Amino acid sequence: MTKPSIHFSLATLLSACLALNAVHANEQAQSATTGKLTATPGGSNRASMETMQIPSHGSLMNALVYVAAGAGPHPAVILLHGFPGNERNLDLAQDMRRAGWDVLYFDYRGSWGTPGNFSFSHGIEDTADALNYLRQPEVAKKLRLDPRRIVLIGHSMGGFMAVEAAAKDPAIKAFATISAADFGGRFLKSLDKDQKLAAIENLGIGLAQEGMAPLSGCTPNGLAHDVADHAASWSFQAKVDALKDRTALIVTSDDGLATENETFAEALHQAGDTKVTAVHLATDHAYSDQRTELSQAVLRWLASLPK
Image 1: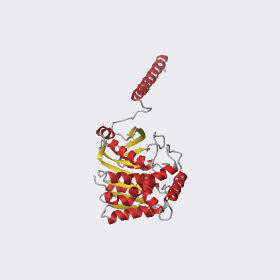
Image 2 (image 1 turned 135 degrees about the vertical axis):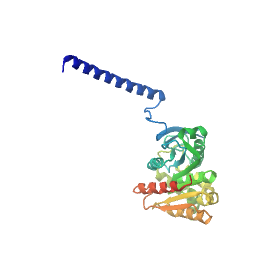
Image 3 (image 1 turned 180 degrees about the vertical axis):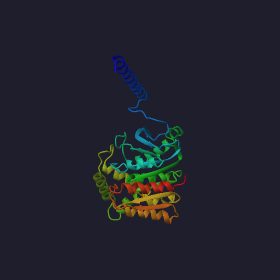
Image 4 (image 1 turned 45 degrees about the horizontal axis):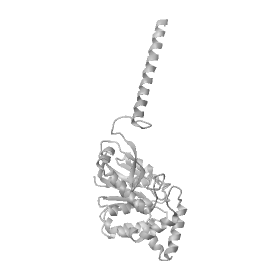
């Protein structure tokens, strides 16, 4: 190769490198103008994750939505975490998104860095506010979701929140509970053998043992009093009449909560609900070694819901 050819090749290589650097710099500049650390590549209908803060009674709840691929509008799930929320079930959220569902996850007031004071009463309000947020036309449009097709799915305390919210909101046609905590029913049952003050103390001890570190503005005793003050209206049996026309999935495990959840499912059946599905998995409260089976049960049930 002659010297002029070498010079020409080096010049061509240098020009190509400069062009690539210019493209990279332009991409960085575009990312900076969007205010995001990373830009979303490709078309506007790709699967994505959106973060937001949802207003609830003077606080802003930290939240995110896994947005399904496609133009939509997609059906949506509000995924409700338990007490205190160590198992967030975000693997289920990813699986549901792949199946075409938008999935909203949020942290109640006073939990996991969301400002405010945590309580069970506040959690019920927060769930209602999350529903109202998704139903706003501009939010539904941005997230490509159908506000008429929102399903509640809750684990443990989240199951309690799902039952409460669905009972209050006739527009919720389907809900699912995963080892739901029937706080009211359990407290009322404990009164059979304990005086009220003793029952409140025992409940507070149990809540403290679950772990309070991720929660703020509350005490175990205060949360126990919250349950005691609302036990009759919060029991699952008190919600049967309101929920007897809904589609429900009741998932249980070997965690000591199965009997009360099976009783709830049977009560719905007895009240005339023919759309109750019960699934039992032989595992612990977090479904630690049955995650795939749990996901399959949830996805089968979601696929069976009316379009």
